[in-house]
Image 1 (cartoon, rainbow, N blue to C red):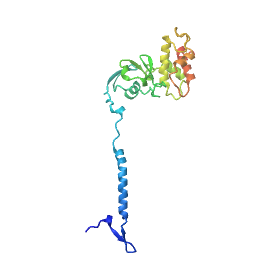
Image 2: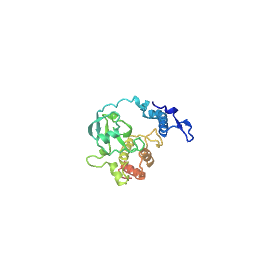
Image 3: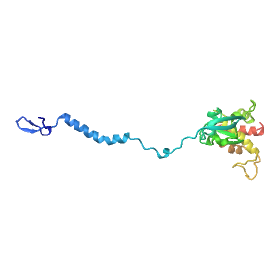
Image 4: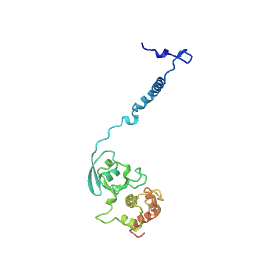
Amino acid sequence: MLKDHAHEEVCDDAGETSPAQPSRRRFLQSAAAAATVGVAPHLQAQTQPAPPDAATAFQPAPAPARPVKLMINGREYTLQLEPRVTLLDALREYAGLMGTKKGCDRGQCGACTVLANGRRINACLTLAVMHEGETITTVEGLAQNGTLSPMQRAFIEHDAFQCGYCTPGQLCSATALLSEFSAGTVSTVTADVRRRPPQLTDEEIRERMSGNICRCGAYVNIVAAVRAAHTGGNA
């Protein structure tokens, strides 16, 4: 007959009987069972997958790439681009024109400045598909038939660069600056904005080039180079 351990009695030294004390094994088993019951809800909470983020749950699938035709430096490129590709990435990663630099990628430094139909823009702030059919000029397109442009020669002669990382954007911006000034475009430092500026002063150059940052600090020489290119070297 099986013994009921809950009511098992044992004899003490005096020969009297007393209720049996729980065994060590039974105590440890009871403690382990209690701990398991206590931690189970936490384990279940950790193993449950996190609910999807509301911001990403309804994200549309990326649009497929499509051919985009760009006229870059006199050559037509047909690039397979997803609509959200910036002009900067299209130039560097798809057309292989690495002269245009990616600096801040936020339109703050001007390193990615290129010319779109002669107008200077930050290539990191615009999409490539927005410029289909336009004429894009990068630093690689400033020279003609292997001959440096007047602005490029002026930058070399006046030592208007140090590390050179910002130089492609500086050159494109300065090239557009001369065209803008010749067209009579005023700036915020022009004395009378109702009239075309009478001369391209150093103050005008600094203001018109203020969107291009040179972390090496070659600004004095950059101003001198732009002035020389404007006057034909007679600065």
